[in-house]
Amino acid sequence: MPDLLTWLKERAKDDLLLWADQLSAANRFKVSIREVEGIALENGLLPARYQRNRNMFCLDDQLKLYNSKVAVIGCGGLGGYIIEELARLGVGTIVAVDPDVFEEHNMNRQLLATPEFLGIKKVAAAARRVDRVNPAVELLPVGLAFGLENGKQVLEGCHVAADALDSISVRLELAEICQELNIPLVHGAIAGWYGYLMTQFPGERTLQKFFTHNSQESGLEKHLGNPSFTPAVVASLEVSEVCKVLLNQGTPMRRRCLSIDLLDMEFVEIEC
Amino acid sequence: MTVFIKLFAGFRENRFKVAKREILENSTIADVLEQLGITEPELGVAMIDGRHVTVDQVLYTGVTVSLFPKVGGG
Image (cartoon, rainbow over all chains, first blue to last red; front, top):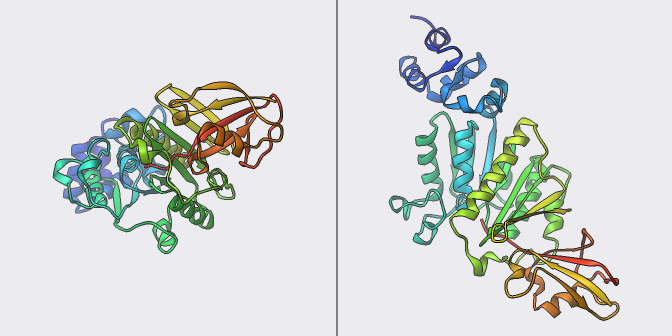
C-alpha cells in the first residue's frame, strides 16, 4: 500500500486535491481531514476548495493560513460572520470565545442564530457550523466571558485576535492582553447603520486612545440595535485585515480608524 | 467667533451634516457638545482640523470640529 503522500499525488488533478479524495484519504489512512490538508499543502497540493483563492494567495500563503491560529472574541453579530469567513479562507485554528446562548432577538442578524440553535451555546453552534463548512479547520470553543483573568490563557499561541465583543471596557482589556502577548488586534464595532474598524499592532495604543474617556458606558448600539447587514460588512472588513496581517500583505487600517456610515454610504478615515 | 462643525454617523440624526456656528471665545469641545445636546458618554472621537483632541480642548476661530459617536456593539 502506498503511503499517504504518494496516494494523494496519484489522485491529484494537476496540483489540485479534490474533496472526495481528501475524504477518502482520511478514511483510508486513518488520519483526520485536517491532517490530510496539512500534508497536501506542505507538498505542493492545493485542496480544490481553495482554487478560487489561488490568484490572490500562493500555495505558501494557503499553508500559512492553515498553520495560523486566530482568536475571535465574541460569537454574536460580528463573530458569526468572522468565524464563517475565516473557516472558508482556510485559517487552520479558530479560538471562539463567548459565554452566551442564542436567543430569539439574535436571529435578525447573527449568522449562527437559527431556530434550531435557540438556547444552544454560541460557541457550540460555531463549532458545529465550522465542522460543516470546512472540516479541515479546528474550532476551539471557549464558553466563558473573556476578561483579564482568563485572557492570557485564551489568547495563548494566537497570531491575531479579532474583536467581536459588545462591550467597550472588555475591548480595552482585550487590547491590554494583546499588548502583553504581542498579538496584533483587529477591532470592529457596530451600531445601527454605523461601525468602526481599526487594526493595532503591539506597541500601538490606538484603541486605548480612541476610548480614553468614558469607556465604561455603551455606545450608540444601545438605542439603535443592529440590523442584518452592518455586522456582515464590518465582520468582512475585519477578516480582510486579519488575512493581511497573517500573510503580511497590503496596508492594514493601522494608526487610523475607519468610520463606516451605511446610511449616507460614507467611509471616513480618522487619523489616530 | 465662527467655527465649522461636521457631524458623523448617528450624530446627524435630527441635527445636520455640516454647519457654521457662532460660539463664545475660549469655548471648548465640551461647550459645543452641550450646545448640540450631545452628552460626553455619547462621544467617540472629537477632532479639530483632522487632529484627535480631548473635550477640554479650546477652539479657535475658523477651525473645523468633527464629532464621531461612540459605537461599541458586536
